[in-house]
Image (cartoon, rainbow, N blue to C red):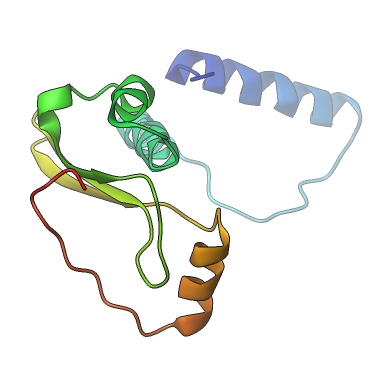
Length: 126
């Protein structure tokens, strides 16, 4: 489920009211984000990061909201020292995206432990 900025803000507002009513003190120090555009960008980037866990290119397109033609390279299977990832062009934001999937398989654990892997890209959808 993807939340809109309005839904996220409303939820955080209700949570803050609950904390105030129950006199719960803020546990984690932080800085309040007042820049709506920044919050929207962070939410969009969160969706793109989650899309790296897609099992197919169609799934990636559905999860990310990107056009299929914008996906330059996609690899859903990881191997030792090569995590799953995708590269895409986000024309609306005028940026190139590289999203590397986190730890999901035994090969990802090996990659995490190795610590000296390098990434090379090919233009095939391999």
